[in-house]
Structure formats: structure tokens, C-alpha cells
Length: 466
Ligand code: NAI
Image (cartoon, rainbow, N blue to C red; front, side, top):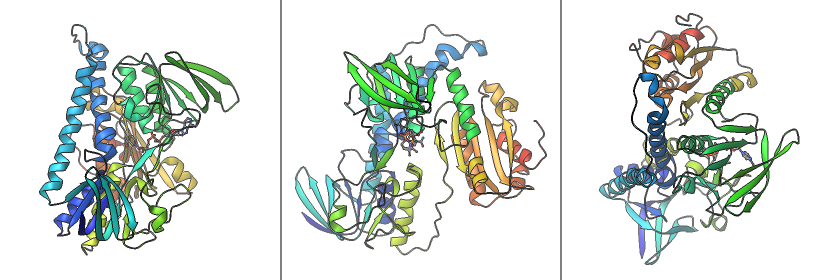
């Protein structure tokens, strides 16, 4: 089949499908190419969404197993039906992926199912089940996302040594789980399986968990996760792994040269993701990549070939679904000639552990290394009335701002509903608010959001409850 479009989008993850919908809304003829059967990409199928479903189920399990006594409540023996738990997760995924398919169809976007490959800067070949299609377009958007990084010492076998995809679908709780990498994926899944009953050990090469986070918040989270029973080896690397019978023996070496061995049933390797550029024909058409294999773009998302644009995990920047979505919107609107200025510089990030870790803007370490004249205000949830009433008062808010109640530079929240609370800080930063603005904003009482106000008050030197 041969067809002509205004825009062909390759990849139906959050970046690609949002770009396709918006471009169609703006009157473009749009094709969306996806090799997986379900739309939604890694995020909806095997990432953000299924992990959040498991996080919720495991949290409830932990709550009824051991978290109710403090409220004076008890239930008779918490049961765990893994099949039902996984089926619920699948239902959530199905609801969202089919919802995306409906939106795509409602907006008149044509979907081509199959592997997309560039023939030239204006033509995409799609190898589908019914043969090859040739799609010609004025503009092409690459949104193929990322793939899991593999370690030589720990080659994936899909059974014992696995990626997050398999770790989101274990049929039974592993007795002993080793997680390599204490980033977002490692920490979230470590906690899921620990809550469901696994003995979990996390190995991290750096001296800090969540290395992208503010040091203080990462330290607080580490202490909490250790208290919950997760074991950590920081500053340690995996030297080798051997599969022996049903288990894996992993040799570790720490920064001081000390070696140790860990026996486990399964190993989750979560040491980062890399831009997914394979089989796209990029080198053939001459799209330039950087030293880390990411597509190089300018500030209008244009690659070295003008008619080709790229967004999301494929290009430099935080590998986050919401960033990709925003970039998808920006591309679609700029192609339609809208002059909406879209600065995607203030991007929140969340690790959905419990307590959740959410952040936006600079860390204190950034402020120091950039030589900024900053001040820091802190507020602990144990002094927040609402957090105490819910029995969920671990963690703190830290707000960094220019001195004397000046512009907010960064906000870091470790605590209940941090993923939701961070939106206030993100909006404040987007609007260029100061710590003084935030400190003088009336917050409902009693709410968790008062902790942000209190951190702002502390940064202005007028803390009340601390
Ligand atoms: P990550 O980059 O967040 O963390 C990887 C961790 O592995 C780092 O702490 C790194 O120091 C460590 N590491 C690297 N090599 C190692 C080695 N050989 N031995 C031990 N540790 C090693 O990557 P992750 O967790 O795999 O996530 C991939 C991407 O997906 C990230 O960019 C992340 O932001 C994104 N993501 C975001 C989520 C969220 O927003 N909640 C959830 C899951 C993923």
C-alpha cells in the first residue's frame, strides 16, 4: 500500500500518540506507526502504568498485613492471590491502551501496525503482517523511545536475570530478589516485591540511591527503605553471575575492593535505558546521533535532516513520559504554524516508592556546584497535622530559593502523595514564583500541602511549626 500524509509518527508511546492526536486535531493528515499490537508504548504497556498498579496492590497488602494495628484495627489473615493481582494490573493496562486506540481513531489518525523504517527523509516503510506499506509525508516524527540497558556480567535470560518487563509479571513472589540499580525502576520494584514477601537486596554502583535526587532526600529514603527490610549494597558492582540449579550466585565488589557473594532466585537489572534507534534506518538516511546513541535535535526538535523530528527518550534529557508528551504537543503545534511558546524546562520527576520521592528544579548539590547564593527551607511531615492523622508522616519537604524569599530554585518532597504535591511546586516555578509568594499563599488546613508552605516559610526565615 502507498499513502501520503502530512505527518507520519513512528512510535505510539506517550510522545508519539499525543503528537499524532494533536496534529490531527489541527487539521493534519496523520499516520501512526507502531510495531506492538497495543498502543501506549513502554509507559502504558510495561512501565509507568502496570508498575503503579502493582505498587498500589502491594501497598494495600502491606497495610492489611501489618499496617492497621496502629489504627486499632485488625483483619483476619491477609491472603495473596498473585493471579488475580496480575489480572487486575492487566485490566488497568487494557483499559488505558484501548482508550488510546479509541482516541486515535476518533481523531482520524491512521494506524499502521508493523516495524517502521526510513527509506529516505520523507518516506517510511512499514513491514506489517499484510506486507509492506510505503508512507510518504512532508514531516516525520521519530518517537521510538528507549530500551533496557544490559550488563555484560548479567545477560538477560527472561527467567532468572530479567528486565522490568518480566519483573512486572512474575507469576509468584521470588523468595530472594536481587535488584541491580537503585534508580526509579529498581527502587519501585524492590519495594513491590518486598511488600509481597520477597527478601530483597539492592546493589547500586554509586554511593547514593536515586542519584538524580537531592542528597538529603535520597538519604532519608534510604533509611526508610532499610527500616522496611530492604538490604542495600551501595558503591558496589556486580562482577559476575552464575546460574546454579534454580538460583543465581552473584559476585559483588565494592569501591574498597571488598568482594562478596549473594544467592538469589531472580535478578532484576535496572541500570538505565538507552535510546531505541535500531532498525529505523537512521544511518542510511543520515540522521546524526550523539556519543550516547541519541538522536541529535535542535530547539525545534529537528534532527540533522529538517523534515525529520525526534522527541522523548530518543533524544537527550530526562527519560520521562510527561516530558515526551509535552514535546509531542510542541511538535504538533509548531507543524500547524501555531506560535505557542513551549518551554519544557521545568519537569517534575517522581519515584513511586512509599513514601514517594518527587522533585522539580535544582537539587542543593546543583545550587552548590553552580555557585548560587541560595537558601534552603525544610519541613518534616511528622509536624504536619494531616500526615499524622493518616498515620503516614515519614519524610520532608525541602525548598531551595534565592536568598531573602527570592525565586524558587527547586522543591524536593519525600512523603505521602508527593507525586501529587509536586504539581503545586512545578506551577509555582513555571510562573516564576518566589519562596515568599508560596509562603504567603493560603493553604487549606489540615492538608499535606501545608508542608510546602511551611518549607517556603522556613526558606524565608519565618518557620512556624518547626
Ligand atoms: P536510572 O537511570 O533511574 O537508574 C539506574 C541506576 O543504576 C542508577 O542509580 C545507576 O547509578 C545504577 N547503575 C548503573 N550501572 C550499574 C551497575 N553496573 N551496577 C549497579 N548499579 C548500576 O534507570 P532505571 O531505574 O533503569 O530507569 C530507566 C529510565 O526510566 C530512567 O531514566 C527513569 O527516569 C525512567 N523511569 C522513570 C520512572 C518514574 O518516573 N517513576 C519509573 C521508571 C523509570
